[in-house]
Length: 211
Image (cartoon, rainbow, N blue to C red):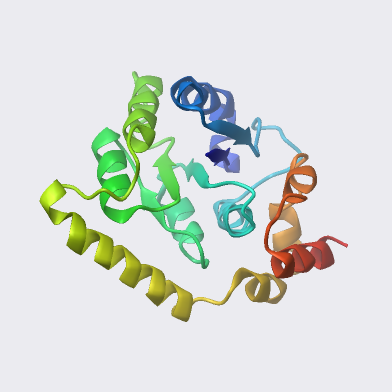
């Protein structure tokens, strides 16, 4: 699995800490971590939580990554922004129990963590425990186990609702403010990694916006 890490501007100083915790947990499992920034508070490439949603959706819908780990001060804005787009199911995760139940019940492909609210002593350990519970087992198995069938059915229903209620990303991106989208996709690694995009229509739309 390829796991993308995205940090927004208010929490960019924690990028290295989050990346270390994520890699420590998931690399021994065979997963790859790709850091899309922001890499520090002073980065020229600034990302708002709204732009996190745009970038996360582009990477997931394009098949560039399989999962997104992101967040903001409270985690709420990043979650809302991610869930504004088709192809993204983002959970708000504060602790290991949130991580485990979201993975097993909701089977999403992104999480938003509060990197400021409640992030004090032991914050780095909480991150490690979150990532352990998030990725330690195949997702979507249900919790408790006897609820697996209805939970899996509800996940399929949710996927169907989002497919109808939200525009395909290749249609949505050109309708957004061009500079907002260009700013979201301006990271130093984006273009080289997005070359692996598996969605031809989305790839063409992104290339036109960035041209």
